[in-house]
Image (tube, one colour):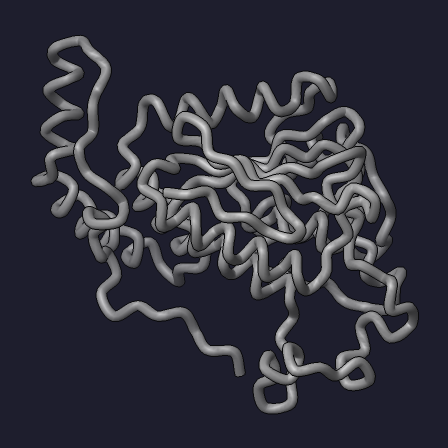
Length: 294
């Protein structure tokens, strides 16, 4: 597939790994409506491309994303005052849909695993957009801040669901109550980050992890696993997981991937999985649809 181009992102695919780079370095990669649109479109592109087996998201320059673009000043978050056709289109029953939430819900539905390579400041939506990604590697230069209460706001991007699932209620509340900026080491110590790296080693470490996935795992199985673990995080009872697991095992067990996985293991050779996410992903929760915004 031809690589798409975006106004606020760089996008490249190499050996099965897509690299999405937030690319407004002069603005510390501040998040605006165009970046939201571009990121959603980028994840549409990675899902549609069977050559992509893993996605890495990072930032250009010295920041990952310094939060929302505040160039509109005091009206930045006043949707009624700012108006605009785009915002009108995102209004349901008087409630304006949060752009960060539109993005994290799209990432939540990704069919490919997503690794964040956090190279610098990650504040506000720069922090919350990562919460729907699967694994976070951080530079020693990274800094986090869930600063909403210090701006007279509340957490967004569905982070009131994602953040406690990742770090627990107590830590989520402390970080959001105080709104303080904290270092990469604290993110690592409290479970937000998987590992910390020198700046020069960050992207190589992210690529090595992506390669481990891309080179060894069946893409359809990875996509199915991502759906199972993320969706079951909100399940009311383990029976829901058992029901979905069982349907998945039944479908995967008769697949070419399963035959190749077992045969390659017995023959002591690398597997060459034949199935594609675009055509081979089983429906493990028939008739499941995401709740409506209302």
